[in-house]
Image 1 (tube, rainbow, N blue to C red):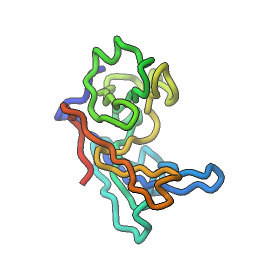
Image 2: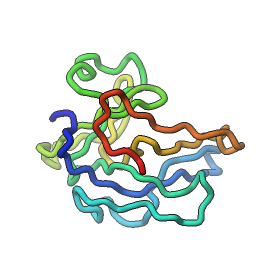
Image 3: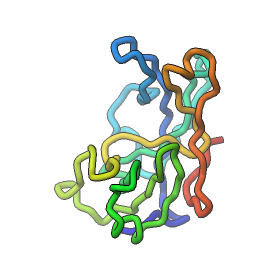
Image 4: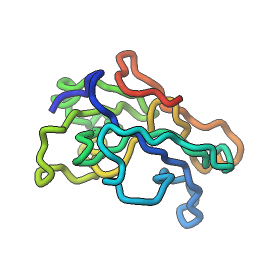
Length: 162
């Protein structure tokens, strides 16, 4: 597995922020219904204007799944494994750390890692990650404050949100 190169065929899908009353917070969710496998590897499904509020408009994300070959390690704290951080190049700077996009096209589906927490962060392997420039909303932001945006690191090599 290697850090994503400029030629990696990232699969772009639409997602949106959604206010979840039960959680009292915005959650990120797929903007369309259907199976993850309905998005072919390397395809681009553009976000559409949908008449929703700014907070819930569709935005572009990168699909993490075995058939796309994209894994993302999200480093949220200093506990993130140093040997991994030294091996990979961060693609996106987030509010709490970095996203490391990993080309895992050579990983067999039966060996594909589960999505979930790891020491100092998370593995994104069954869902999506927002592209740089996307807006994230929190309960405070629902009250009219500006959203935080995904930024790009100095050496970011991932698609930027339009």
